Image 1: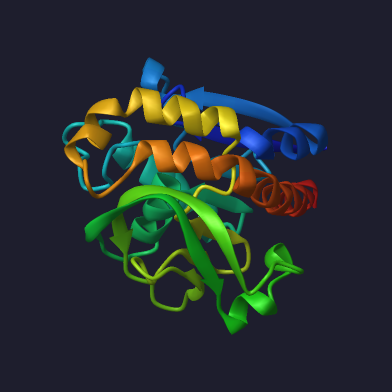
Image 2 (image 1 turned 90 degrees about the vertical axis):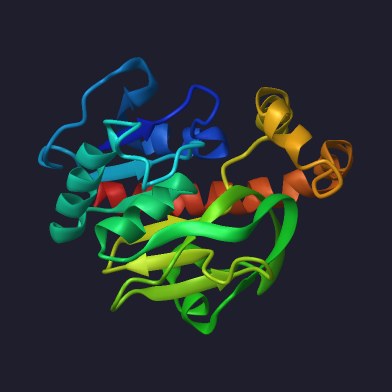
Length: 235
């Protein structure tokens, strides 16, 4: 079994549907940054790294002291070609560590929105068998430029850079392939103030109503991707 390190920024953003395949095939160590846990300076001793989401921005390193150590760890993982999966904030950290720019988007993308895969994704093992276009769950306002030499694997109408691949084994996914229905309901409760500020733009009730008809298909894709990433960690 491989050994995987998982970085969590807030208690309500965990592995979700990815938890079962990753914990099945790997010994998993969690670092809860919201509890003040420290980040190791190097990836040595681990066979894979997962960096989860959170409400903070990559550029808020003065407010969140764990961001700079995270970036150093991700840089080390990229250099050593250790399998790396970043979700939402995690994808933005990967982009930054790879030398790219992370910044606020023109709008917030929250709820169920379509994602389209590129031709490069068609040839990528992690996304093998995925539909060319599918409905995914989003909750972000920041975005990034594609790092030099990286591949752009997916886009949406609001945010063209949804998935990047850096090197042979690092993937940054802006949307939330890991969510369960329970997580979505919890996020809507936890982020009540943010949603109130977006009244007329984002409809929480509509999100909840759409979730039952969308979540099963998304969870199938998430489980497949989680199993494939887990095999990368095993190797």
